[in-house]
Amino acid sequence: TIINEFYPTGEDGKTKGYIFLEFKDRSSADEAVRQRNNYKLDKQHTFQCNLFTDFDKYDNIPEEFVPPPAQPYKDLGNMHYYLLDENCFDQYSIILDGGTTTAIYLNAVPEPVEIAKRERWTETYVRWSPRGTYLATFHGKGIALWGGEEFRQVSKFSHPGV
Image (tube, rainbow, N blue to C red; front, side, top):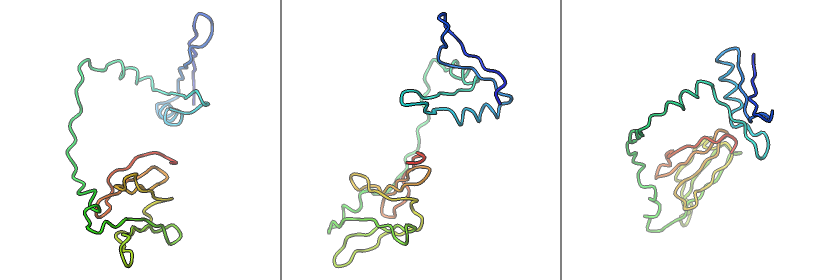
């Protein structure tokens, strides 16, 4: 619940393009920022929200940059293992059982060979990356990339509704 609002104005009497809102408690302010930050007002305007305490945080940035600690190397295995196959068979994916199961096949001769099969691997559909290294699965909360001989999850990206 908003208990006070203040619109700063310039000498011409027009607002400066921002507003200060006071909420009844911290949880109301946090919820307002969560719901309204980066809210698209129209094609050219996006609503930006900050807590008043953020001003102190941004005002007290150290003068000297301290790099973040290095992340340890994570060995993902041979992501291009399929190129080493002497027959160079293509891989392809299919979604079956009414969309609940996803399977990956090697287009071998005389019959395709199933190399991976999982239930509920994706919520909608799958796509191969442009060079075939990764399999992207699409979900309500974002995208997951899978790869390697066992199709382990390599990475995931939060992007609701993609």
